[in-house]
Amino acid sequence: MFVHLLPELNSYQEQLEAELGDSIWHYAEHHIYIVALIGLALFYGLERMVTVSKQTDKLKNPEAAGSGVFWLHISSFFLYNAIIGYLLIREEYESPLGMLFYFLALGVHFITNDRSLRSDHKHIYDKYGRLLLTGAIILGWFIGVLTELNEVAISILNAFIAGGIVLNVLKEELPEEKESSIGSFLLGAAGYTILLLLV
Image (cartoon, rainbow, N blue to C red; front, side, top):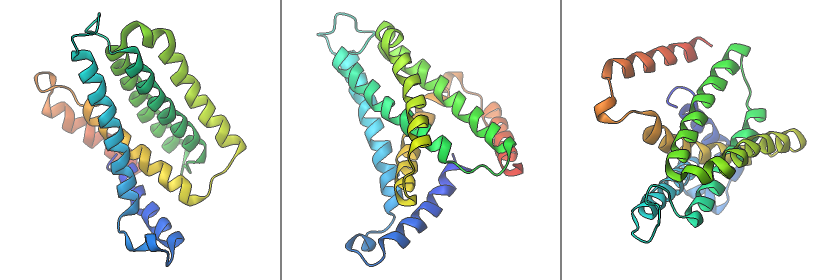
């Protein structure tokens, strides 16, 4: 996030400022970061909705969120995965090794999201969610093969996804306090940063 994704937001901001020119939107600062914040806030709101739904006394099974919340949650992750699938084909990789590390990072991210969604929604996720989310990545990739958005739209999509990724990484990929190890965290962060800097 800090070595690859967030630095890209700066270049997206510059592209957006150039595109906006002298329009009224030019006077608002940090457009792309606001889009990233919207992505983070949207996914945080969805996570809160799932948590509140699971705590409601009306649910027959307090371990699973209500089906309406499930479909809203899955729809948002469907869009999230489809955008990532689209952006995968539009990403410019400097080397095959860079592509491999990007693939590995996203693979871990998808597996973590999968575990979290299964924990929230149990059997209904196994029945529908996994297929829909896998299909979303393929659909996004297929749309990317057939269409090409301009740089501003790509910048906005990347920023939106960056906000969602920041929330999901902090929520799901960092272990709980009782399970965490600062040494392992620092070793992993330093090791992956060095790999990204080398590619």
